[in-house]
Image 1 (cartoon, helix red, strand yellow):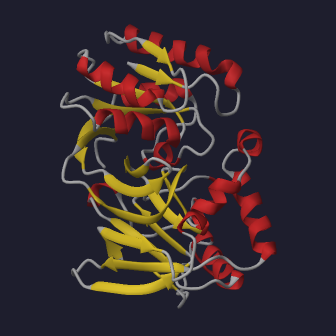
Image 2 (cartoon, rainbow, N blue to C red):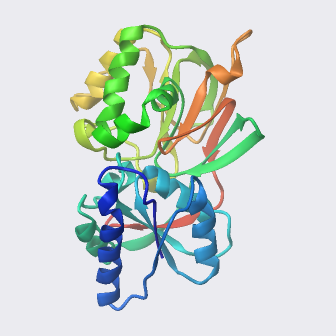
Amino acid sequence: MLIYNPASGRQRGQREAKVSTAVSILRSSGIQAESCATTHAGSAVDQARQAAEAGYDTIIACGGDGTVNEVLNGLMRTSADATLGVIPLGSGNLLATDLLLPSNPEAAVKALLRYQPRRLSPGVIRYQDRKGQRERFFIVAAGVGSDAELMYQTAKGSKERYGIYAYFLEMYRMALNGKFSMFRVEWLDENGVRHHDKATLVMAIRAKRFPGLLKRVRLGSELARNDYRLMVFRTDKVRHFLNFFLSVASGLNWTVPQVGLPFSTWFRCTPLEAQAPESIHSEADGEILGTLPVEVGMDQRTFKLLMPENS
């Protein structure tokens, strides 16, 4: 089953045709394939769950990281053991880049025919919204603070027009405005030692490869590790953010003392005294979620992801 969002991303008018072509390629390879369009925000969660329970053994998310995230959350809400696949049709396509999938949908679906399912543990983020505490699974990344604020402020129209570079434009605008808000964070390092600090950004990264201007970034993170690289920005100074960005974007990876990079499987963010919890946002796989308090970890359950055979 191929699930796609007909109303998001660039070149949306060609979306249905690209999905139809992908279905045709699968059928010509002897695979029974169908497609369905999402009907509203979040509908891919139920559609993925229903498809898996109906007997589809592979659910392919045709879109960006947001569509992939919804399909993952659908698969995590059923006992049916379907595999998740990706055809990149979104703005950022972080997971697709990490999986070495071509940006061309026809080439991507042909690559998927050679990929193999691999079991991974998903990340899980718990946060607050108007309905109380919520839980969401993620694959590539989850963040709290200025990272989520960046996504919260990036206009949808700008994102659809400029793709991932819309975030760089918003990052520049935020940098001109000066400081970022700090909050409390505690985390466990890979040795199980608990740490406490204040930060303006805490981000759990699982991707190994990044698209566009970030293709030189090498953090040591990897999906197969079943943990994440934790980025802890213990600073509210713009110059430290810019210093770290230049470090990773250049591939030189010099040390920035104000930024910690431990491996971890758990962290928790809470507000400072007299700080409004709703002033600090969170995100997962590029989708804005809720506010503090936020807890991020690795789930004990697993899901299957189509990945290159030698990964």
